Image (cartoon, rainbow, N blue to C red; front, top):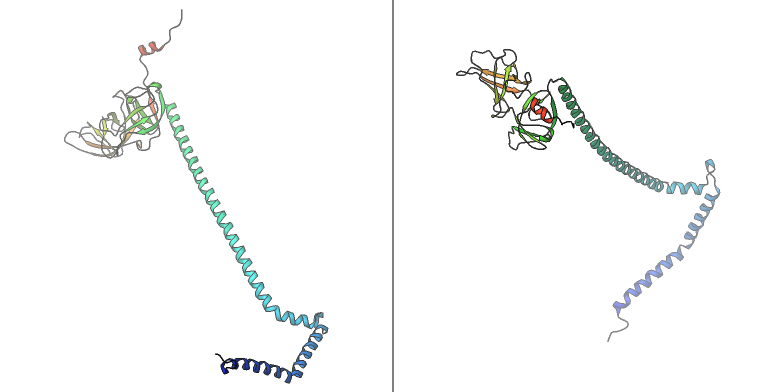
Length: 306
């Protein structure tokens, strides 16, 4: 059985009672001091309400302002920093949006400029083609290059005109810069053109200065070889090469190319010619249409009813 008056259980109660009695005794002993402090505080409060400082500010208000001013300044500074950060973030966000919009507009403007440049270039090519067509003494028809033969070194192209446009094989194809090649295959709506840089092509040509004639055939690296020119002939580098008209395909006097190198061989000179036309960038060409024979023209004339 536990004893109700155990010394260990009674000690905390006695200590608590002793502390409570000590605090009460302390207050009772110093009661006049606490009363004096309370009266003085109340008196100071009443005086602060009645005393007016400079600029008609009551003392209590002055004390309140001085007490809470540091906290107000801190809160105000924090609010200003937050407001500035928010405005800065908003400005950066708007600037980013404007930057993206300007970038989009710049890309669109560059694309439009590119399209206008392409249109201007095409207009210039068409103008040059029309000017050449008007100056030529023979009939031509304009055609657009639609494809090239497959292969790393393509020596043939396809144009968008064929037999339905009155074209046939062995018709010369030219540009304002010079000779391109000749038609070797004809289809209803297209035709295949063999370029002069092909080894199987052949163009009757004349050197513009010396008037020496020869046959131009396709060489290597997009150059041509001028063959059958005797070693004793004088051929200068840079001399122009034009069509002679003897092959009955290319009209006389059309630019073909320029002599790059010329050296003596066993019998004939070794002459390399650079084509006058950039054959890798063909877009629009002219096909030289041969005039029909009188018999064919008569067959094409419709009969008049009697």
